Image (cartoon, rainbow over all chains, first blue to last red; front, side, top):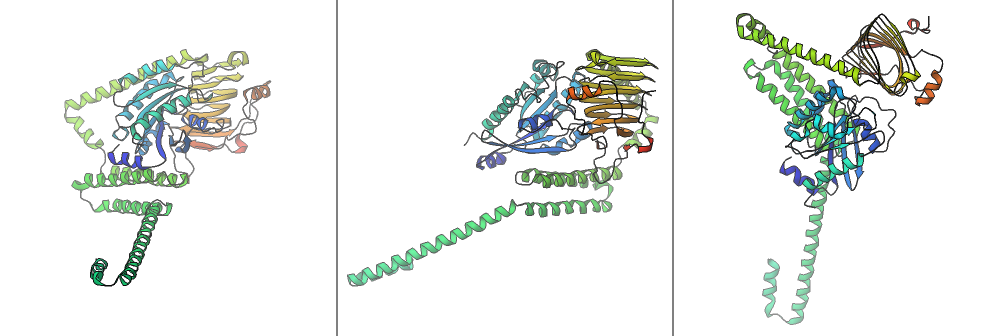
Length: 184
Length: 349
């Protein structure tokens, strides 16, 4: 993020934060977004394209971009990188088969220049499923400790029950705010 | 300045006259000040209006259209560009598109989501068009690679590496498939020409997997929490209501009679679905699949439906999203509906 962008942000009276939510298909990105926003989650189908939601939370205006994770859509992810303050990476903790895939996609995102300044929150989703891996194992599987270029945190959660969603979102907002809005 | 001069000039006059004059001057000064303020205010309003205009949707759409037309014209201009300058020319176009993308992202705060969606689609289309054009004008090195392979030993090495890679990936894939079976709480795998029946005590609330079956028939009279169907050939699968997702991968020439909340189909061909789905079915890397409404029934199915909470009234079996077909104005060639006359209505022999 350039100096100009920071200045622009400081000037804005409303504290706006742009969050980009990515992850493999069936990770639960849309469900997290809808659950957080208090919407019905029973009729969600795989996202063809993207969803944008603007939420008010703790005096911040969150622009959340939820982009479909199907293989054929991943090449479009880069269209959404610009001016992203925070990246939320959602993992299906029960999908052990594709953790390797998941790791690769995440690490290639982190090399992206336009995401260089963004804070990273990893949601180890679907903790409510009996076969899911705990967040500690996801952390190892995704080699998160290798990440030195971004502020990051991993948080086990369940979009279906809503567990820990708030915790994660609060953390990412705090981290972004401490970088961007310090001058207020 | 003129006022001050006058004040000095009036120094030798009588005091009442002086006071009168002073008053006049103060008056005038005040008026001037007011005028100046008014002028300033006017300018401020003008400025504000201008910046508002910059943030209005109208301004956005006209600026967007202009930029888009510019890019499209450049695309047409490609025909006149010489080969040597081609790369730079395409880079320039890509840069333009990126700039446009940035413009859209920056404007996203004040635009209605529909406008953003439309703009985003337009950009995607542009990008696709550019990629196509680039491929057409500057084909990837396919041809040179072939001709070189014949005369240098080095490139033969690359071929070997490719083959080795392929082997590795196949191995990895096999390992994946094997680990698949391990994680399932209930699974049927590696069978040929068999009839398998599972009942509610075996499957209810569990992840059920069907792997690598050939010429077989599987009947699941119960409601698994999720169903994974991988690598089936010439099979028929029947399953009761699944409150979660059904994943279908690498199936050929099958008939799947299933009901679920979500259906995700990958790498599948020549397969028929008799489907009950309450959200939307999706297909990816899949061709020649056909859909019809769910027609299977067994003793106890009503109970299973009500226990899972799967809505019986809502069935969007005919509304399929194809992730390889993003055009909304044309129907995907990869899937179709089974004509009513050809649908099977009764399955039990």
